[in-house]
Image (cartoon, rainbow, N blue to C red; front, side, top):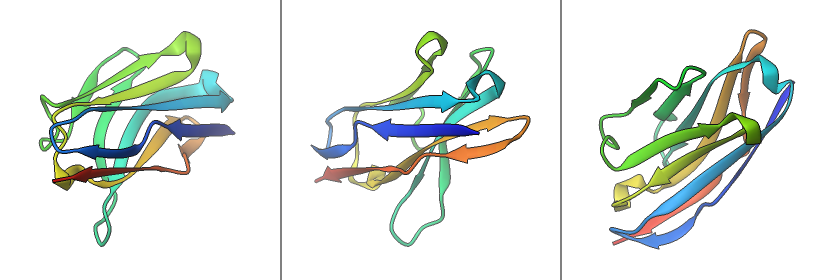
Length: 115
């Protein structure tokens, strides 16, 4: 089992920045990929950014160039640096981890961007 705890959400004005953190615990040695997803009210959950064990990343087109995902394995932590935030980035952001044994989710952290 893997437990994920997110932090760093909040209220920010458009154009501002936030950094989300996700700390993993449990069977972390089995984790291959970590990612951030988001779900806005009335919308389906969507991938924001993903990072593999080898450091390869990919981003949703809507955040490319503004968001950056990084991973510090020694701290069992993945970050999402969000710059130039827009009102349409408002959503609950979820940390995700995948291993050979399954897929795991954090409880989510709210990000609200005011115009």
